[in-house]
Image 1 (tube, helix red, strand yellow):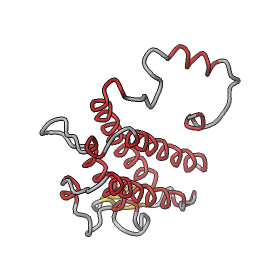
Image 2 (cartoon, one colour):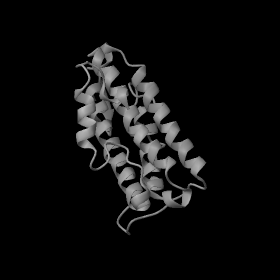
Image 3 (cartoon, rainbow, N blue to C red):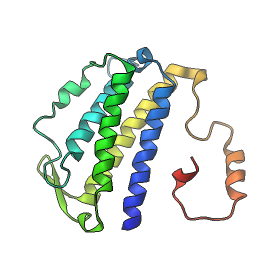
Image 4 (cartoon, rainbow, N blue to C red):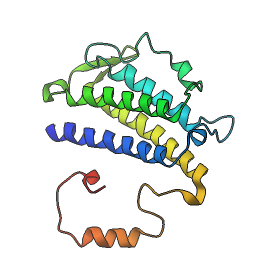
Length: 183
């Protein structure tokens, strides 16, 4: 289980890095772009993720993950005045999450925490949020690719490069480490 705590921090940091790398390729105006009337801009998705993180991870072990002070519907209103404000909000959410997870001990993993009065083991709550955030970070990356088109800098193995990537990986001895250690 100790490896779980180490691995889950690495997983969250990986998804944060995908968002960071997307933001670095876009202007503030591009972050506001909405693909259609049924979609959210990267700005809105970012605001929602950060709001969720602050709610879920503040006093994670002792309070319900849906805080009374959270106003979820307002997360879907465009209010950022600058890219810097958006990134600061993003960072604050991740700081809250990572500090909460890094403070956990092995004995905490089977404790029960609540989200909207539904009990979860700490492991279940962590996995729930990892899935939620990776879903939204995927949206952020996808909208970024739509905006940048041919100017997009791939965040994974670029198209047509799988053989070269695999050849490089298989030319090295087997190791046991987290897949993000090489990124």
